[in-house]
Image 1 (cartoon, rainbow, N blue to C red):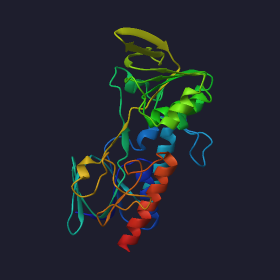
Image 2 (image 1 turned 90 degrees about the vertical axis):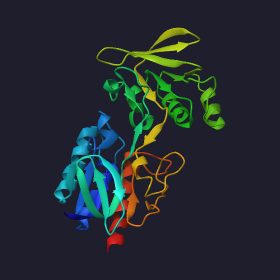
Image 3 (image 1 turned 90 degrees about the horizontal axis):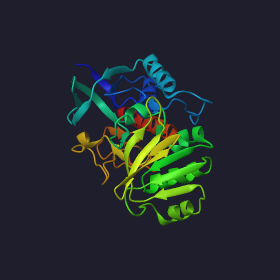
Image 4 (image 1 turned 180 degrees about the vertical axis):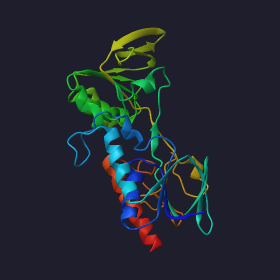
Amino acid sequence: MSIYDIIVIGGGPAGLTAAIYAGRANKKVLILEKGTFGGQITSSPKVENIPGFISVTGNEFAEKLIEQAVSLDAEIECCEAQKIICGEEYTVVTDEGEFKGKTVIIATGTKHRLLGLPKEEEFIGNGISFCAVCDGAFYEGKDVAVIGGGNSALQEAILLSDTCKKVYVVQNLDFLTGEEKLQKVLFEKENVEIIYGAKVEKLLGEKTFEGITISKNGEEKDISLDGMFVAIGLLPQNEQFSDVISLDENGYVDADENCLTNAKGIFVAGDCRRKRIRQVATAAADGAIAALAACNYLN
């Protein structure tokens, strides 16, 4: 069995950047990805906040990352990492077999918590988004809704209110759970309407997203929309590694900007670690830091 210098778990911007940096350092690299290479960015039809690109689709950006990693001799396996076994080397157990590495970089990212409604996944990137910083500009002068009432939802709504015609905030509780200072800013926005105690029951539209049906006090109401931003939480993909690395109370890898875990030889990069800002640029930065840390450890 081949022993890799670095096994990267996750093929998003963080993992692929880590592979690129490791490849440039002449390390033998394996990338494991269970789903779509490129991660969540591939669901964005137009991205305008990646350095070096005025505008690019998520898929195009992902393809360039993969091409660059492969050009540096990174190997790729499409499989799901299920656990890490510590030993003389690290063994990563997957649904397709086992792989051995001298170091491991965990870059599994997060997935957005969904509403669980029919057509929801179909409309992602085509009316449904999760990031106002990434996609808010596409809805300038239009009507949108933000689903959620926590800090992330309030921040999204505030940002969207600066360019959108109307912003609905749909909260299933009778109060907002975000910080008071964010609530105060939001309450001062004339184009923001907060709907308390409401639940999204249905997505409107056949081939394109056209709005939502909400229920409140036993009554249903349709709201016509151009876009919807879902902000009801993120789910880190780290639970399978909790026996070898420390996770915080929310399930994120308990590591700072240095991308070091509590286990020697295991590093972390991207959205799956404890951090405040989750963007493509910060994920790529983590990938570079984690790869350089792994290379220093190997050397």
